[in-house]
Image (cartoon, rainbow, N blue to C red; front, side):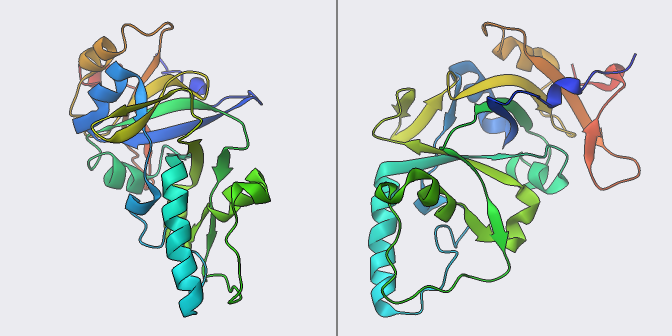
Length: 238
C-alpha cells in the first residue's frame, strides 16, 4: 500500500504550508498545549541576526544597538522552512533526527515573509535610518528578513508577531507563545528518521484536536542526501 503524502502540499492561496522542526524534548508539550514559542531576535542562533548590513561607523553601531532593543521589545518571530527533506534541518533543529517536523498552514499576511540570502553585507550610509513599522509594514519586515548565504539551506519563512497586539499570544515562564488558531493551524506531523517517540504516543498527544491530523514516518533516502517518507508502515515506530 502506497503511503499518501499529497497532504504535504497545499493549493490554498490563503495559507502557506510550512514546516517547523523541533526536538523530542519539547514536542509533546507543543502538541498538548497547542502553541509555538515566539523567538526573541536577540537570542536567535544567527550571530548576525538583524545585522545583514555593514556597521562601519560608530554612530550607526550605537543606533543599531538601540534599534535592536526597540525591535525585540515590540516584535518576536516564529521560523519555518518550506522544505522538510533537508537533512541539516533535521540534524540542527530536531535533535539529530530524533525529533519531529510539524506541518502547519500559516496564514498569508503582511506578517509572513520569505527570508532572502546574500553573500555580502549591504552597504549603508552613516546617516542611515533603521526602518520602523511607520515606514510601512512590508518594507520593515523585508529589512528584518535578510541573512547570510550560509543559512540558505534553511529555506526560511518568518512569521512576525507583534507582542503588543497578538490576540493569540500567551506567556509562560517569561517566554511568549503563539497559540494554534487563526494565524497558524497544525495539519500533520512527520516523525524523524531516528524517532524517539513512536506514533502511538504522538497520536495520543493530538487526540483532542478538532480534526484528524496527518501522520508520516520518515527515513533516509537510499540514493540521495535527503529525508523521504517511509512507505513501509511495518517499519514505522509504534
